[in-house]
Image 1 (spheres, rainbow, N blue to C red):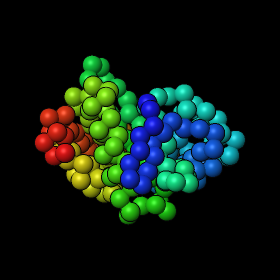
Image 2: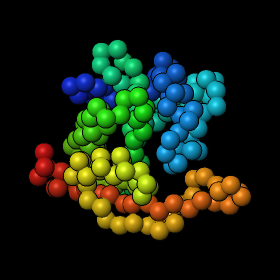
Image 3: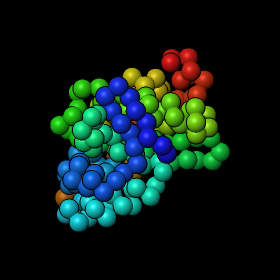
Length: 178
């Protein structure tokens, strides 16, 4: 995916200089769905940046003009025209509208240049920030999957199953709110 610019942000492919920002973001993931992406060293961050840079739908979210990586956006394509999306923002930069700004630009690209007809996101039912972001983006809650998935374990080692909300937005709905 090409570089996307907004008023305050640049969304671009990952590059080697993003390793420190990615390490800060993923050394202690606050949201369980990113637990598998946990990074334990700067060397692991360098390797992960290389992997992400080869994936055209993994984008670093960076502040202008210093190009400081503060988060990430990603998409997966479900043929023929549906995309699952996700995001993760550094806690030090929350509450400033960056996630909304980045997601709006990302959705615009997916709908206008990548042929998306439908975009959806899975959000854990205790992740209220992401649920609010979905609503601000015009997404509707389509369902709640009870004990849908496990990303972490309970103290006794058994899987901790989490309830997961499904949010979605159609291209025609996006066009009506844009």
